[in-house]
Image 1 (tube, one colour):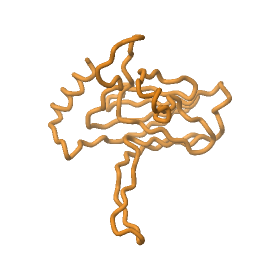
Image 2: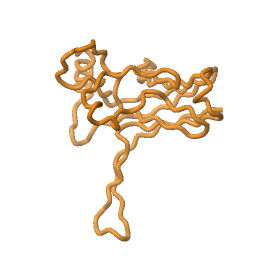
Image 3: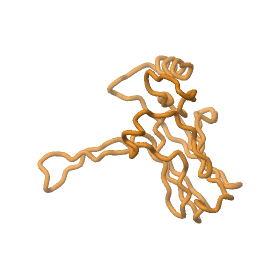
Length: 170
């Protein structure tokens, strides 16, 4: 039986007995979604592991699969820094797997040979409640988590909603 858990991580400081200064422990930027699979499904080609990111109303914002690559906008940096290019498919190995959701919607669709001014990555979601739904055959499990406002850049919920609406339209 599969299981899913979603945790939001932030960088923390830890003290070491050998160090005079706090050591910053880097954390992934976003929501770490861990899921446990009872068997190795990576190579069978028959059973799809699907992860959907939903908003509070249940609207699907992003869909990831173990069988199909999520479309990605082209990156001019990929040719210089290929190690930064992340796989756009879910892991489907036996045991614990992990996907880090960067709190963004899917990348924009870019026509071939387009001139880009800015980033084609999807906009970040505003603060609110989001869900991760893992589907494996007939089995489905949903886990909720909250995205909180950045206290260094406070804004009203209306301002966040307007900014997000504008970013989605662009």
